[in-house]
Image (cartoon, rainbow, N blue to C red; front, side, top):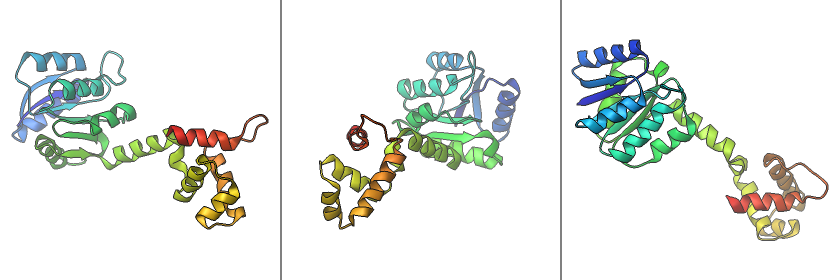
Length: 215
């Protein structure tokens, strides 16, 4: 297995190179930023796996994961293992849901044993999907924050769906075999979860239906 490392910290970069080499992994290159990584891949035979940090020069924001996305686009047969202290939610979601070879996303401070890292490398090289549970948790939490409808219970979504059909509370109660007061309670819960405060001149019911139809 041939591996290329992209890590801006020289200490971590060389430490990771030495660790993997000691374990019999061929590290063909170790670079300090995303642009250098892409240039190197374009100039030589790509490795089996690229290990990349998220935040690298020049801005130390998301250069690494943007480089990873570019690798997926230009060299889909190259597996990518993100090894970082951070979860960049938007780009991470795009990376783990895209096509191509294996992909992994591990948090540095949660990789406690060398065997865990080696196992992740071999798995992504085989085309597997390896994501730290904490990364999954943060991606899921971010998704729920950005989608207000995700806060609704299944019953509340049923009520809102019938609102979107133009039914009155009485009609919803009949369709779902609920009491009128139960429908009203569900309606108030929907308005609260969608952040629709009572205000003169606006129908919370209409605003809720508009959000539902945009989902």
